[in-house]
Image 1 (cartoon, rainbow, N blue to C red):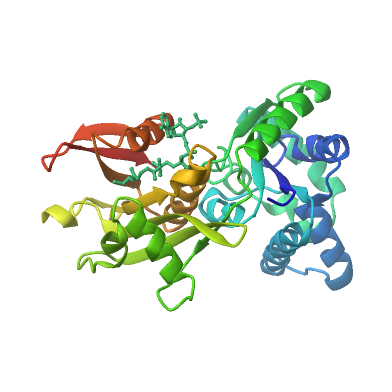
Image 2 (cartoon, helix red, strand yellow; image 1 turned 45 degrees about the vertical axis):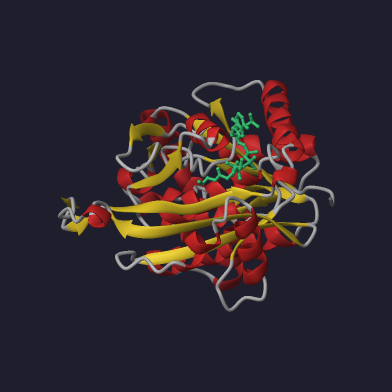
Length: 336
Ligand SMILES: CC(C)(COP(=O)(O)OP(=O)(O)OC[C@H]1O[C@@H](n2cnc3c(N)ncnc32)[C@H](O)[C@@H]1OP(=O)(O)O)[C@@H](O)C(=O)NCCC(=O)NCCS
């Protein structure tokens, strides 16, 4: 396998200390630093931003540029941003390599005080002084993205010990790298030439090829994901996005005028030759990130009690179990 790229995702709300930590990590881990604010600052200097709307547009352009550079970097990168969980789960999952998230956690009041203190010194085009407390600190940024990759938390209320943090991140990265995550996990549609390869592997792993193609009437969406290593298909996962309860003819659970939806894993398997190398986890992380981005409330799957490795993986990932009435199986549920 090729050299695995390493990505460190530095997340947290504004004022939580990301821009202090990120350069230290980049220097010690010898990775390029891609900070969204550095890119946005350059865009502001070149294009200007007379109003908040324009400033937000440039913010989006800066994030797209940050990801594009991260994808193009042959070694990986430290990427730093106020990540919005609902978008970032899917976007970070697209990075091909070992990913570790460093979440800067501090109290809301501390973050807001730091933010307000530095606001006047930043370029006017950021419109920092005009932003409300909810713009600064909210459910999208006050918790880690946590899309299935390891999360290292840094308590940034006071000063941190950089050497200790670098050690923790380096050992998490080494684990993620050794875990064989040098695997491309991609969506594969039936018209893609690689779909047959995915189907063939599904047939050989517990004859799951039918579960990859069967039409499920109630599903809102169906996606097949393939894992490829050295150009060969080594794993597959099919999931549906559906309304919770629809499979059993229950009326939907309605919250804020919307029906709750879930990601339901219909088929899942890994080539026996590469098991216990993290391929199954990478497939799950991809599906979880997609479903979180699509606004699903939960992930769900069913597994026979004979599939010990499958339920071991689910339990290790924090799923809860509930006996199913079908076969000798259990449902596994994870709140997103
Ligand atoms: C279930 C399956 C997809 C897991 O794939 P995988 O690539 O081996 O899984 P991972 O390497 O990502 O394992 C992740 C975690 O799951 C747990 N796990 C996986 N296989 C395990 C096993 N045989 N025994 C105990 N724990 C296991 C471990 O906690 C592991 O983490 P660790 O390696 O850090 O300890 C694979 O074993 C498989 O294809 N099984 C047969 C098909 C199947 O059961 N499909 C389910 C639908 S019916």
